[in-house]
Length: 599
Image (cartoon, rainbow, N blue to C red):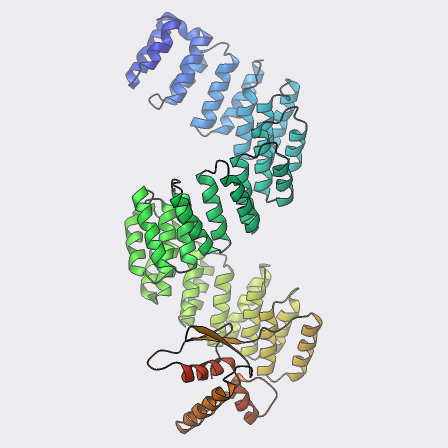
């Protein structure tokens, strides 16, 4: 075999035995010692799936003096084919020990290895070598340096390399922009984007993604509209649909998806997952089914991420049979998200036994699995089971999240299990878990309902910043326990902080119009008819033995005044209006922004 026949022979190879025959020929003829021939073989073998990687290593070890191309090839093979960046960097150290000379292709490979390992220390060492060997002006080397520092979160170093570059190509701009996008730095990303001499689609897509994460939806849409005039690709559409979905603008996401389909853009699993998630948010099972059908048509139905989204959609919409079918079809390929979605779906539908079976059949349970089950028990008033599972979760060494803690404390409230509630509170303090508005409100609610006002006040005053719900909880709790002096004190502090209590508002639809009622509202044009209906209903209820739940009124007034106050609740105004305007057998549906009064 001659050197000039090697390329043709390699191109004709179709089976592993052909490669072995060529390798034998090069060894017999001595061509294996020729650096050019060896490099050709290594390069070809590392790119072929028909030849074991060991063949390339044997050839490389046989060489007495490999050239830079051969070193680069074997290092790249370790990184890209063997997923072993550490070995590639180890080879580089051997490379230097043999006094071999690197070229401008050597360092981009090694810098990519450092980026894959997120190894800033090794990267800075290589940066010093880049300068020492005179490759710091090479644009390809500089771009990989920018990428390395960006991935390591060192944007100041990345920006310095960028600024010192003699030439900036599109890759340079895109790389530094991607770094700021990854860091979530909107201000600097916008500055780089505006400074680009040519804003290509890759850069625009990066900005749409960033704006979506930072809830700057209008800015993202403006960029998309500008891209539409040039060469908008599938990624642009996907990024904007995802932006809408992430920011709970689900109708806009669905409209844009329809536009995307109408424009003839190819649909992939990424955008389908976003659209299905949007359908889940607004509980639109019908639209979700259409998207599901489209996914099957374009061949992306079997992606695990899509199956997860579909299971979540159907279970959220109460279509548990459809969710179960997808779950059963998924088999071993489904992940923890699928299992957790299915458990949540069963719990939403009240199928507690099915949820339990699935939960206890899980090989590994994440914190979400535990918290979903505990929350489900609490929602279905299985409070003892919720606390038992919370304690079991502790025995398994799983750190509870906010959902599990809130559900467990809520269970303690309903069971008047003050000792367990105090133990959970102590656990939160000992482990220095973050106490937000939801958790503090739940703790306050537990303490006041168990008669421990001092503990409730302690939680309240320990919070750096209280939400409206926390203020309401402590005031209602103090009123419930008759601590009127503390109520006045808290209301004074509330006024000083400018906190305004959210008024209860009840809504009812009648004859195509939505009517709103506030507590004690007398502005409605039919208020006299409404009050007359309330009096009539009250009289009939008392004849039937109805006794007003005056405990719902926590004001410092007598029972007679409390009964009068009960009839000023907004939901009662709405129901009375419904009785006047809505003819039977049409049901009266009232919606309220706050808790419905028990009375």
